[in-house]
Length: 502
Image (cartoon, rainbow, N blue to C red; front, side, top):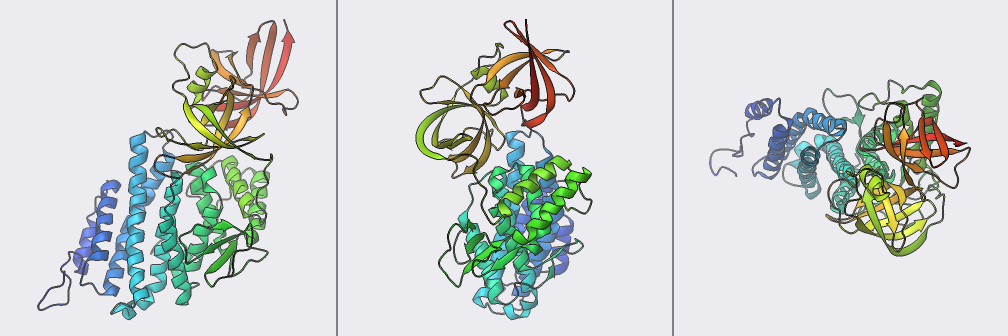
């Protein structure tokens, strides 16, 4: 609160610059959780305390954020590196990261609001406005990104602030002003680039990506942001639109929206040629260029997969569906995971059973899969890549599928897109030459050249190692062709099947 006599300094621990520096220097060096918790408290305290001049308040917010960067990056690396984190570990990491960006975004947005409202003394801080806008937009886009890491729900109020902050940048004529975002960290930016990065990220369908793929997609988008297009009306290079006066995420330009001063259209068509050229270079060399800003070293196959995903959504024409979709309303019994799949199919292992099947609601169906509503999300197993055994209502056969798209629409409900892998799966035993392994044979009607897929526990698929199985009077040999897919508790190998009569 303000002192009544003798001063102009606010009654706050960080009012003295030397004390503020000491507080930040003495944050726990070996405990990023505790450090981010304290920084979040300082964001709230500094942004709401009375008596700070706008310039002083903003300078402190910038310093607090700078102190948090190494810590939030450390926890993000831990989150992405954890192969199979416990629910507690995953939630603790996510809550710390998302909580930091949420508190930082709120504090910066309040500071920008001082410019919007013309608060007393704010003119003295006008040179800081471009940097404040860039930091605000980045914090908000990170908050949205980490919502997507757990597949939502996405808070549209955050999108509303994000859109309006950028609108104010245009109003003040600083949308294209370049600033150094963080001292000592390479990479300048503008409010417009931060806005475009957030828009293109959301338009690139992160709900169909695994967390590590979400991270890589965001970094790739950052590299291509300067080639993206932002206009006030639809153009040949724009495939999406947003209204910067609304609480809305960007939408595909299916039809031309009504003209409005707050309409903004955008696209990445100009970046698409470079993206495809980069993909071709990685395919031909088998190496990821060292100058790609991915935050680490990754296998070329993973990088190519993410680049291919982005290419689909950056094209001016939306991705075509392989199969027509039909609206339906029916129930679907669902068992998840590799053990559940074996149990559902009656694998000869006493310890494995189907467990309690969940009941989902099918909304649409095609030859390639289902779209379904999960009325009650139970546990933390539901994620992109989860293996499913599905039994349509009234049927007695099981279908094998994988979750390819996931969006949580509330604390308990979700919508999923499921790819069908096989409508005629069978639990078999396979001889690896070293041991007998249970697995699920997946046959499909469109398979060519005797190729089949086999679901196995992780580590069983080995390049060059064949599988054998006797079924009645037939002897089956499976020659490995490659790994088709994998998840937390399964791998799917592609094999060429050879059959010899007994």
